[in-house]
Length: 208
Ligand SMILES: Cc1ncc(COP(=O)(O)OP(=O)(O)O)c(N)n1
Ligand SMILES: Cc1ncsc1CCOP(=O)(O)O
Ligand SMILES: [Mg+2]
Figure 1 (cartoon, rainbow, N blue to C red):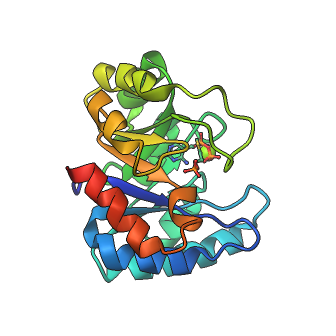
Figure 2: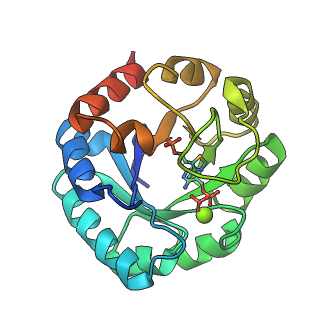
């Protein structure tokens, strides 16, 4: 399994957003350090997810970057993505691992040490942990767990912890200090006036 990038760009497919332009800008700066997670709305068709994912896989290939697909593992397999990400409403981690195979990257959402250790035992190769901070990108989430919550999960597992939820370059240092290996962002890149520059700022915060 290749080493995991520390900066995860989760695609923003809400109306008015332009996910491929943001992916291109971020890849040009972060190159193989970027992981792009293709995440579409639950209401999107499989064909829409497939069309976006195959374009992202092609863009990532030019930089040796990893593309993952959120939720829809059949789409991940169909486009030759590096793996997928599942949460509580998706396939269980063990089933997801069987679908993707042993070589794939498999992320699982965890907000507490117990869920985290179960996910790792079932085959997760990294954990998405959050929401760390308030976010306007996804509704219906529990209260933010903050750096302390991220730290509790990181201390319980030996796989990379990717902090998600309201993450900005300014909040990265505290998350890293708490034990996060990397971060996943939607708005910090999709809403940036200059996504390339925002990528550079996030990378700088992740590596200093
Ligand atoms: C890196 C990362 N962490 C967490 C999530 C959230 O996944 P999930 O809980 O399944 O929610 P949806 O994204 O499917 O709405 C994620 N996608 N990525
Ligand atoms: C999918 C998801 N899961 C927890 S927070 C979140 C959205 C993160 O978006 P943002 O980086 O804009 O807060
Ligand atoms: Mg999910």
